[in-house]
Image 1 (cartoon, rainbow over the protein chains, first blue to last red):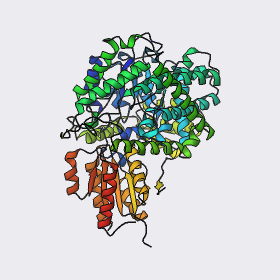
Image 2 (cartoon, rainbow over the protein chains, first blue to last red):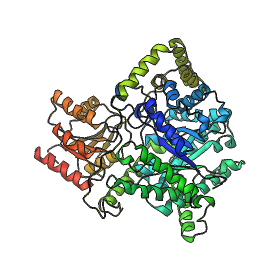
Image 3 (spheres, chains in turn red, brown):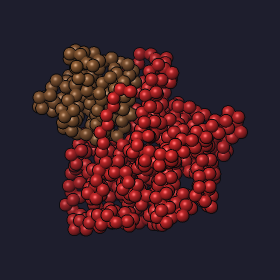
Length: 485
Length: 136
């Protein structure tokens, strides 16, 4: 859609510590990836330093460990941020930290902010119902996330500071239509928050992206993208009175994954390719692919390369990406698009009737829909109504393969050593003052990015900054009771 | 009247994917058991403490982050130390098949995978609890 060039080829990658991961990033660049989406480990994602008690056993496991700017410098050594079309990190619970890590790194590399593009997920609301990397309670978290958009609207309007995610809520059972409605409702909540701060819709809407997802039905995926674009354009224009066409033109990212199997994993190459094809036909602006061996653990280099190659083949070899909306006019697809558009709007209205995203989350409405969907999916899978070739149909006795990629077991201790060294070498006073500055701003209403950027520049750690915010905002936690219906 | 069987479903470590945990919780609740789901990010200590507080018969841990060899044996150890060795432990998630015998040797009763049919999990849990003197 709105196509002057093919979709951006993203690669989601990260493991171990920065030193180990840097060569993989260099390889991704060599292979021709346009954007690196940093996979960061769980302690980082939930704001714990590598030496925190909760980080034990998790350092560098599902992504690269980032404790401070120092790790970013090592990770991007020899990779100037402007050598990529975009750089990205998920950073959902601490958007200002993710943003600041890139800005401070750009400064170290001698780049102006106009010379590179940052792209963040920074969508905290979905974390309370799926994925789970929240830190603070819901309401302060909305402020933390939207401060990033506000900062970029003023200082770097060519960046993408927030991605409204359908993907994880669909994966958690909502189904793509409901998940799309929920993601839109989450988006409306952020937008309203920013409008209340005095922004105009055309100052913020062009900075937002959606991460759409449909993994079970090829044509539904295409129709969902078309329908969501319409819904978005109408809401921006009619509800918010957007005038700038860039506000109405939804930018879509997607991740080709979802049906991969542990058994006969090479078949996943076909599954990922077909998912990617649907997304390209649906008009995706940026795309990333899972690796076929990702079900076994962190992707091997070979598998990561194949993922990039699949995207390049789709982008360049067959003319697939040359035409805008190539399937428009197909009666099947138009009917599906129309129906999905109505269903999205109906589900969005339900959330709004409950009082909007925050209330729907607090009342358990999102989770209820997801649990119901997840139970239904599991039942369908168990009786092979949802076919998984080689698993619940056409199964042969094949051995469960073993993941080939191993993370060096010394990562944790090496990372902690580095962290201790950093704490000794940096200017402790500057760190203390910057944390105090964060505390003051967090209690008030000013934007959180400037004080957090200052702390990151001073080599304050992710854990220290998050602890300061935890002191002010508290933490989110809850226990649930299930009984028979 | 005999009290209802109580099960604790928990997540240890930092992994935030709890679809599986919630689906299993729902399935066991539908069998008439009382199921307490801890929510995310618990330490083995927190799991054992909650299990004892809630007086459960069984703990089911969902783990997808690859840290099962660290956390699961630790829970067994802590249960013993707290004189709660009668509480059984089962686990499910992304756990390589090669680790299953190792975990069973360390006292974890059973390990399930994403593709394990739900009926198999439910049947297993019922038979395990029957061996312990029935469930209701």
